[in-house]
Length: 230
Image (cartoon, rainbow, N blue to C red; front, side, top):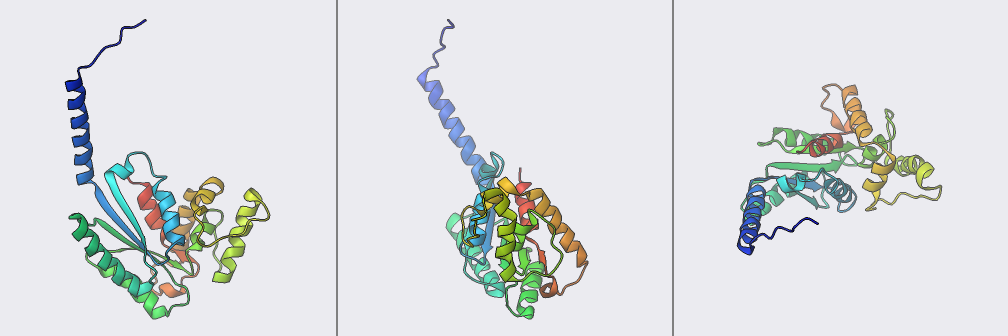
């Protein structure tokens, strides 16, 4: 039987102090993401699921905060900039990457287009994960490529059609469900969703009439950025 090696208590305490200091140094240097969503539950629930599914160590190197603002288009950007100042004041650290997540819905085309252009012209640039018409388009892209215009009324039926073969014919989509990320991860493909999102973007080329890009979503840009964090 091997003899146990006894490490002096003082040495163990020193190791513990050094480890705590190492972790504190990492956390003080980590990048800070703030993601501000139009919805108060649907989008935050998805991104919280994704956040906690990131590779081990990412949340030590990056702080990722997600807010459901209950605002839309330009008012959402105003709120995101306000929250950025609040967070920076409270933490004493800069927000390295600010993202907003919002939908076309039935808002005026001019408001929607202006909000997207405003993000691109900000300094620094605000990441803009917009969807036309709704965030649920991102869920559908986990399963298939959709190129025909989709109304809000069709999203629920299409999501149910994609998930019922896996979870049962009685499945009904709940908009504020906390289970959507897990369901999509198990039965769909995030790689397919990113690929389908890129493909949709390419169909509109360099057009700036974003309100007419239906279907289209830039959520893939934010998701792709997050899952590539090291």
